[in-house]
Amino acid sequence: MTASALLPLWNRATEWQRRLAMIREARAFLYLSTYYIELDEYGVELLDALSAAQQRGVAVNLLIDGFGQQLGGVLMSPATRAALASRLDDLRRAGAVVTIYRPRRRLQQWLGGGHHVKIQVSDAGEAIFGSGNITRMSFTGWNEYSVSLRGPIVWTLLESYREIGGSVHPDHLDHLRAIANTVDANIELDYWLCNPNLLQGAFGPLGWRGPNLVTDQLVGMIAAARQSIAITSFYFKPVEPLLTALVDAARRGVDVEVHHSHLDALPATELAWIAAAAHYPRLLRAGVRVHENRHGEHSKIVLVDRNRVAFGSYNFEHAAHDRLAEAMLASRDPRAVEPALAIFAQLRQHPDNVRVTPQMLRALPVRLRAKRTMLGPLKRWM
Image (cartoon, rainbow, N blue to C red; front, side):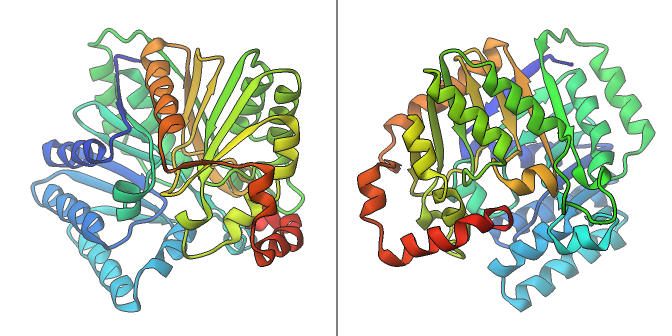
């Protein structure tokens, strides 16, 4: 797959304005998928823009994950949740397609199955692909990373919208293909997408270990590293094949660093941090440098040997492997790699990034150390 343009959107205000501009400039169709929407000032502004687009004749398609929205709902009062439901109903009545995705099997729904892919596409032939949700936290709090893309990859992204629970009008795909045929696209990209809910049997994720294309590609990418690996993730608590690949790389002399979120970045619960901290002794013994970002690291970037990068929605966690549809773009093109190099250089110097050390672990409150010991084995569900 190829792109004709790739614009990094690390700056939070820049991404938000790019998203709104795409909606306001749409003339025929607009597709947007997200894990959840919070009805804060960002959710309100986005829904206002989608409503205005629908009213001027744009075919609006909004895809929200059901389980993700349930989780995000804890951030809102009952009245606010009701107001959001009303806004979504208003969009439907105006003619928009608003889909709440839930996997087919009841057990998958109960265990948190869904989609976690964030794609926005318009008739102008542009796509935004990345890590963030529609919430204040994604645009004023945590680090996030998305890219704006043009070229044939936009058609591929919209076509994949179907695999994560959405519907796509064939005429819209034809329109994007026609635009792609008019541009010189020479940025080579790989697109990895897996929805494990489509691959599982009656017991859903229970007893299922794959194959998951995205997990397998990331394992291969890490296993091929010869000099360096740099990773960002929300909370770093990967499935065993990824953890083993990373530890093995560090032990063979690869310089490995992980940047993820501090305990304080997610006030609603300690569980995600506890699940990640359960791996700290193993990672530190292997020589992996682990950094916790105090204001929150929600980007998903893997940079190998400073010449190959992958980015998108895949958190290093069990849910990304066996419960959630996830997607990543990967490339060796300098136009994709150089922004990642700059991001990691910035993270290493940022005062909010705290290096994890054995001394720091020994200084943790007894309560946290006890929880890490007792709950660590349950990390798959945290």
